[in-house]
Length: 381
Image (tube, rainbow, N blue to C red; front, side, top):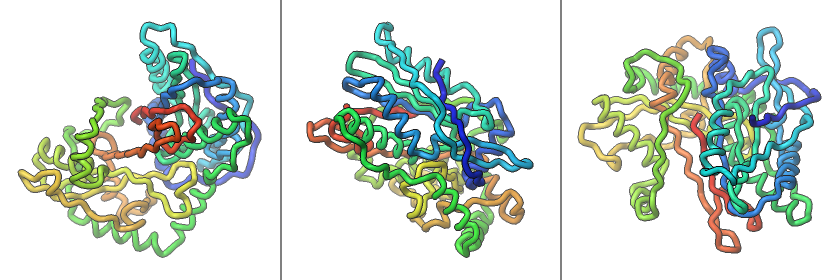
């Protein structure tokens, strides 16, 4: 069984951000649902010292607030506390003797992902290291979505690489550039008290006026998903180049999804969910949960191609970050209806860039030159 990370000690209580509150209420509706567990593993090609890797994770846990969150409830209101790390050891599994080491590791990871998380008791994340071969390791990380989003996972991966590289070289790591969770909470509070919030609210009322029901291939009966169907396809370089010739990859994926939904449903006025980072300049380097899903309304003509589908241009914070209060009745029904498709009709597009190290190895996430090359695999939420 994969050991999770707990926490001890207390600090000042603070409210949840709007993004966290949405996940809190969703989990309360179905406490035994593990759908909000998110996980990934990084395939590390090269020798790894498990003890050094554990020391690295301890350092990153100490300096990263989201890895030290404990949730509490006061008079029915969820709050979060940043606490000191508890005593913890990194679970290490040597699966190199298995007939299929990767399959054995994945089986353990998937079993861990299916365990529901008690938000008040925790723990809210877990790490494990699997040895598949003498020079191939899998670092597994699982979190509850209430503490992390996709951008933050990449921030933590970069930091782990930097710290491990420094410690393995016998030096102290540089100060962390990862921003605190409290920056996300403070930014959220300031936004809600600003004039921008009222303007954005009006934007969404106008944007969704006359909108159809969310586009879906389901029969209209909403049931919370407890799992996913997934198929992975690896694009070769020429195919990727052809896609890039059409436009930015994230926009190509969005247009292709709209075209697919049009062909499956014959709908020409589509409303899809679009996952966005929802970050301001003040929180771009902060680790925590800030991501949002906004309704994307598109017109698709019969016979249209991916290139012909017109996607809206970025319209600043209004179309990317606005979140509503559940008591905001004039807009609540329209937006929550538009977000009812957060399963099969939500577009999540993550394009990771790669950089070349001094040795010529291709590694994602801008890892340090002396860190073994890494490949990232993400489990769907």
